[in-house]
Length: 169
Ligand code: S3P
Image 1: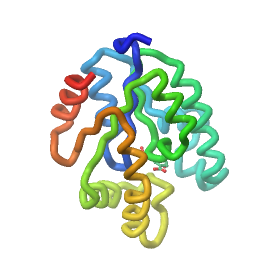
Image 2: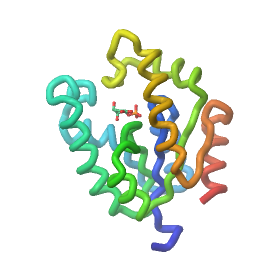
Image 3: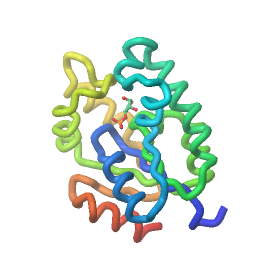
Image 4: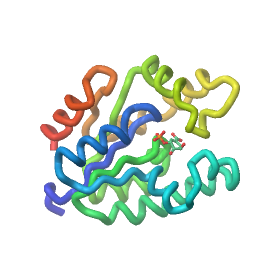
């Protein structure tokens, strides 16, 4: 596939800025934008939290895999994935075959601060959210590092992040 036709796939931990960066980037590049969590919410008519509560995480992960299978065949699209997509090797290989993988990173204190003020993340609904975020952050770090390119969203403004990605592409 020609580089210019490839999807731009955003990965990164919860709170790394995938959705807001993706929307900005898609606008700047004049490409369609898909956020996989939002798409799953639209398709099911439920929030991600409701899906976790009613059907469980395994059901959500299956929906996520099915959607990734579909959108990884698209071209020219900016795709913001959920923070847990990196745990599925097959999904990542599919996305990579048709796209450039960009990892958005942020320092752990920044992630703790960002995820602390948001309540819509079912994975984090537990008594010791801080310990869980820290553990998942460390466990997943090496998976996010496999990306083609990384940008630290705790250092750069959203516009600068977008410009860095465009310069890399
Ligand atoms: C998850 C991240 C969420 C969402 C779901 C699970 C995870 O997406 O897909 O709650 O396991 O990291 P965001 O990274 O957009 O919050």
